[in-house]
Length: 212
Image (cartoon, rainbow, N blue to C red; front, top):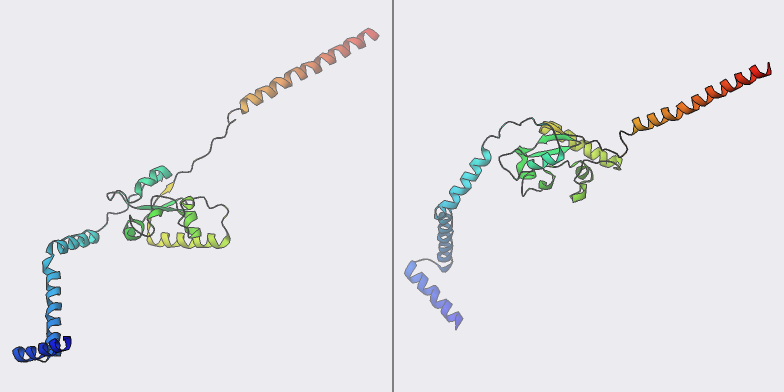
């Protein structure tokens, strides 16, 4: 039954179009492809306009890097790309670089977005994406890891502008400032001993006088 219908259809196509079935279906496929392309270009003009605008915004020139001087790690977190009006910053070995021109990599949604706004020295040396490696502490790293970190630093120095440094925090240990007290205590302890020596000398002199 199906074969008879197919034979009938081929005869009708040849009779009404003058084309063979193969040619007819080829032309039909081409017409469908042309229709699909045209509707894609003009049917969603709103989406096309939005995409064009987005490309224009990306092509806008970036503002020149702003020198920040010395800032704390807490202040550095403000430049992680969450605020598009602020530059995108990243730190290696306490040196801060403006990576705004590579926002597709270090900005929100980028493959290295978690490094932005932080000192990622340890993570870069180890090629790690672990949260506990997002620190400037590079103690305990091996020679190969330190070489990898050096390569990253050379890359950043040649490609990006340095805009500041991380402020070093000096830990305050208990007992600082007690030195004066210890000194006075030592001075006080020295006093009686000297007095005792003088007293002993006076007693010896008096004893000698009595013997004479």
